[in-house]
Image 1 (cartoon, rainbow, N blue to C red):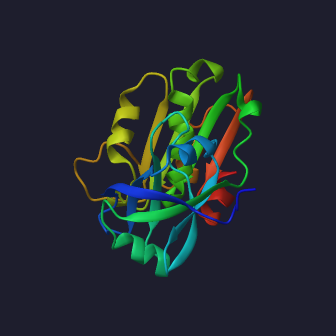
Image 2: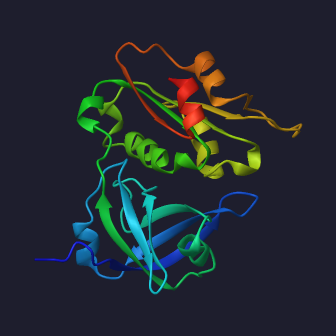
Length: 223
């Protein structure tokens, strides 16, 4: 029997600094052993334990979709010992991944329904997984309309900026990006708190499910 507490070795292939304050970085990881990747079967909404030898491990939501093959992505906030050490690492170094853990979103419930995905701040990581999953050509027809409302305090704290722009251009997703405030004269999206933009932009709740992830205060006033 395999030990579920033993992490699988992965190599850091790429590190992307997502935010202007440098506090959030996305790590692209590749399994060293193909059999480990084959066993790592997950769905959007799950997480994994990321470990650094001699430092410890930390639970992080999986930012990739299972439709993305050959790698995993985790967007990590620099908040403690392990995450600080991770932020100081470089491509080519080896860390550990244990999982997948937790329950995924109930995707069988969502089939045939409209989906509203609402996220605030760095909680958008597992929501990225969900968006990529739904937009995949093999999955898109399984779901109805897709609406995404995503906000951050200011433009420099938005994650996945290139993908946000790409999704904005697509016709099969309704994107509503917002920031609490900005003095950028070139800002072309919404300005306002996520709950406010949700009230303005969210479609009818009929035949729809919502996935909401963000700070507790945001969730309180969004629901």
